[in-house]
Length: 244
Image 1: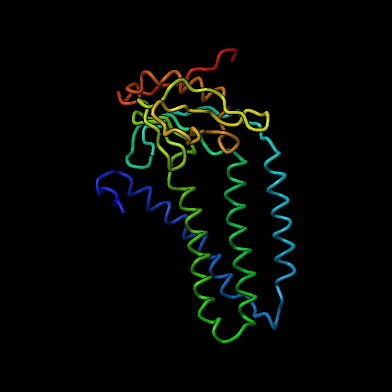
Image 2: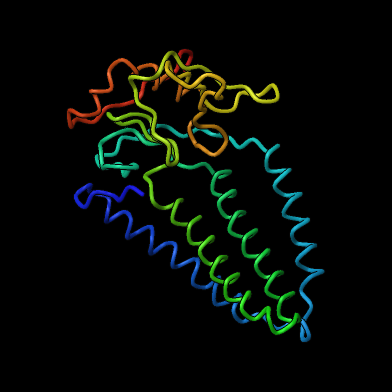
């Protein structure tokens, strides 16, 4: 495992992300640890009902297309994967935050059902409950850490395009274009020039990003041949797409 450099400038952001993760995972762990035993309260029917509702809500959420009128915003300090740089940032959309919250709820509900079911099992299951509790707490913490760790959902910096934890070098990118799924434009197709054959080309942006595909394409195409513009220390602005 590659350890992060001690002088990469990201430790402050890591600490903030850890605090956010602890602020959410702590109460979740406390609530799960205080669940009543199965002989006092059977949570299985409510858990299955809630999981069904969550599944239905996620299906409907995928069909919901939020209005995304955000713009790429200049930031002097953009916390990326390996360094802090200047660049343009696209924040997470409402749909993106709903997805993050939904993932936390799903982990918590699954854990609640499992802990409740194990509480009425044989004595050997008493060793499984702490493992499940720790696993659920770690899962919730990791989801929250990932959401708080980076500046924005997507960022354009001198080193490349960062989407989530993935970074794509400018020198590897060909002309980009809209990515279509089920007849709808969803995300920007990067088309790297040296991408492994048979592997699907990466797609950035989409419904979890508050900036539309048209604005992302215009910005990426503009800076693809001039990424050094981000490194001069002066604010830059993203161009508007043709037609506004």
